[in-house]
Image 1 (tube, helix red, strand yellow):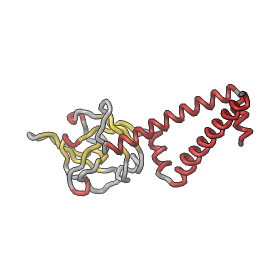
Image 2 (image 1 turned 90 degrees about the vertical axis):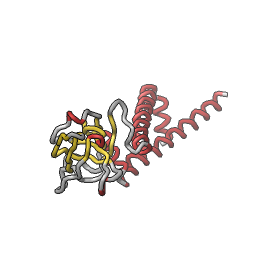
Image 3 (image 1 turned 120 degrees about the vertical axis):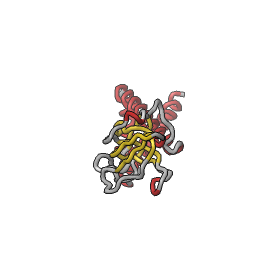
Length: 190
């Protein structure tokens, strides 16, 4: 392994490529962790530019959305919502109380005291309790495929081990060997 690392360090093009890959991987990991941390710390209450990131936690929207899929929603005027749109909203009643729900609008009704919706998960047999427009956090924009893949991998024991833990250990090992080689090189030059 040490010889392989020395060969990489002696080949300028490979060394530059490795540094670029390392920086790209670092930026991607940082961004993913930032999204996940902000999502957890803010209890999904932070929107950036009217967009919010949410994780699907149940199979109620299967097959459209799977458990652990990460989605992007856009804050919209509730008047613009139509039957068939998927919305993200704050649940306030029953088993949805205090939870963020992502379901499809099946009924929309305008009354004197506001706009009301009935939603239902695609895989559910029963419709949800009525919600008002103030509960709507946003309209489903699209699934974040890369974040969804990472979410599925991280939440799988084997996936976490082979895709996150093992590469991290290899990365740390490579860095330690590189630092050791630099120290040895400096000692031999002095």
